[in-house]
Image (cartoon, rainbow, N blue to C red; front, top):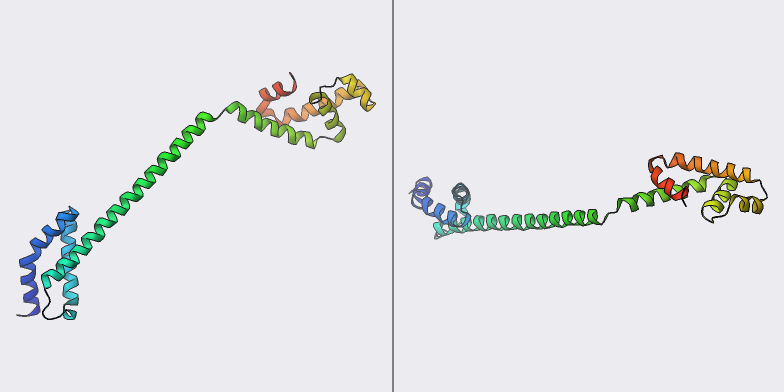
Length: 185
């Protein structure tokens, strides 16, 4: 019998069995048929390397078995990765929810405003900065500051006005906090 006739007979005798075998595991007839065709092609391409007494149907079935195993292991790996990604997404969502629940906008707003105030105060001329700190942070009266620095109370008022003007400009987006921190303290 010629090679092609033997192959055609093999195909006719075993194709249905091979497909049922593969489909039992992969549960997809199209994929099972593809595996059978690929295994038969692999056999055909490598038939001359097999021993003459080889069990050809067992050889082809072994190829199909390995294709099914690779396919199923790929599915399992894909599902494990999807589960890990889903678990990570759930963790990330829970973290965002917890973070948002714990967020106090007023505190964030105040902290940002305080940072701007500190940076702005550092940019003020030395005398203006000194007078502003004495007034707002050390709670000294205009008269006490004037006596301590040997200037007039009008001079103290001028420097405080100058500092407040720069702060007002830098804190235009934070005006309610600014008013709270510096006009009522």
